[in-house]
Image (tube, rainbow, N blue to C red; front, side, top):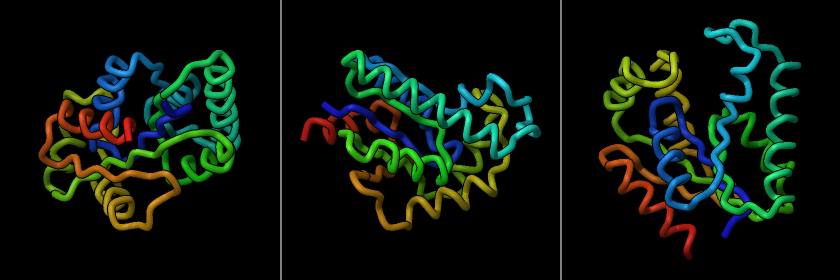
Length: 168
């Protein structure tokens, strides 16, 4: 068991869907960093600031540490940018965590997912999503990171791979 499972990837790769399924299978909490930020950001996130980001990250850190304090395991966390995951790695470097990076190999598939009107998120900037996806896919791995190609798998197949990784 891990203390934390950090689920990262560009918008549209399936993080929220995968996190919801993992939550049910692992019987673990799921905290989406975007949800914390949604408490005070407007719909377009036009009122973003460094101060807002810092406060939100402090809130997330407190929540995660509180779950660990109360003996929860495999706490699933998602909704990160590259900046966020770097900060979390530093804050939780003494803890037992894993980073699962989801990526797609087909830019058109990612574009279609981002533009799909049935998505929970109002995010529709597929060009920035494609750019971030390529960066995550092609970068050197983070410590304790596993990359999973989520292009043509069902969410259940992706979750099955993650559960296998966690049991190693």
